[in-house]
Image 1 (cartoon, rainbow, N blue to C red):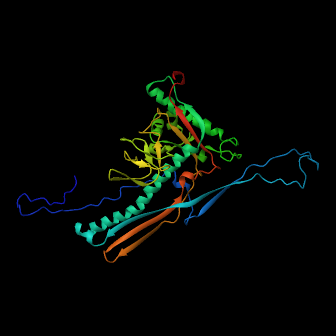
Image 2 (image 1 turned 30 degrees about the vertical axis):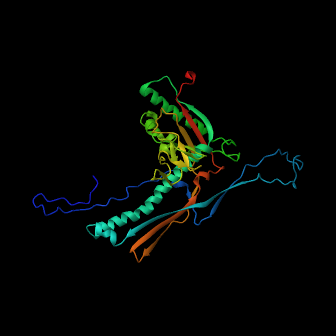
Image 3 (image 1 turned 180 degrees about the vertical axis):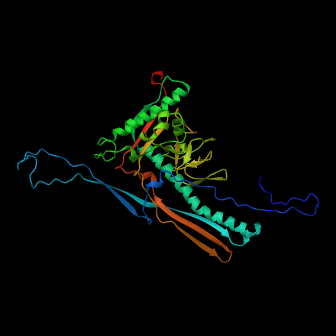
Length: 375
């Protein structure tokens, strides 16, 4: 119940009022936002800093018969290696979080110095917590939406069967693991098929984060008996909230009276009928909102999926989508006239949506639960 600001009348003496005996300030309530993006952070410092990545290809071999006339070349023939490919990521996005706290006037609303100090402490803690929320939502939404658009499609995993009930779920769980494991083992053979440069590469299962929407892993692990007893030889899934899967909206539009799929890709305010809604990446836009091109995405799911839902499985190399963070600096300004302090937290990073490296395999699979003969 919201406090109305009024003291309660004492039941015995109507001229007296019951006291406020305590006040507790809750903390920010946000914690443990570490995700698949944490291991992808690389060093960076200033605006415009660039990190380069150079990829090279395999050489060629030629017949040799032990003489000076092998036929195709001699000692003076220049045999340059294949042209390398150079990619770059640049720190080009900076954000600042401001907040003003009073050292004197706001204190009038608090019982004592301790509770007032707790309140100010929580407000200032929101500077770093807001940065964590921004990073978590921005990195995950941009990484997954970009990966889904740019990944090489390995095809469908058929999970249809004639089983029913629990037997059907167990079959789907085991079949999902089996087919993904088969696909991933194929990558150990040197091939030019799985990276954007067409260079000769091979990959191991442990090179990838195998990412599925939140809700799929529990429906697999709890029913797939072999997983419970021998998990080490199976692909390890990483769950990411289902709201981050989707396709970017390349054109702007105005939403209708309801919205269950269009979500923010950038942090932005949307105003509808004089009501402003602040959206972090991944948040649903308010109905009737107008958005611009490339600032939102249409989510794949409207609710939590499970093993019986047709889902997208992303295989993202652990060194793909590098996130280069710039400096993080906190500053403050004391206004001697108003006796308040403006605090600022400034930080920067590269464009995560365009951070895919062509050197690294980026793959996806789709599950299909429908009987193809029934269509």
